[in-house]
Length: 89
Image (cartoon, rainbow, N blue to C red):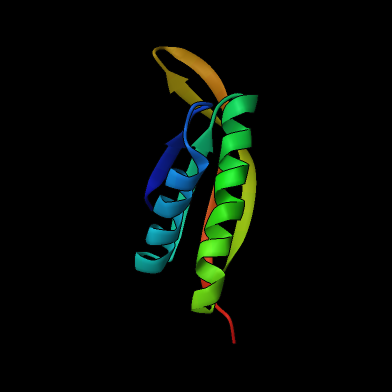
């Protein structure tokens, strides 16, 4: 599964385009964010991506979780959004 790392400075529309493209091609994507600003941008991107795929008769299921990451020998807590696409009937 592809992992998109979102920062507080990420542009939600750009991230949303990447999420939508991966849902169309692979059916799933993981979005990771560390910190409140990054989580905010990630949530906005997921909401925008849903707007991109709904007209194509697709929708998504999002499952958030906390994960521990080792970044530069330091343990950080990130929010991981497991995003899975599915066809609407």
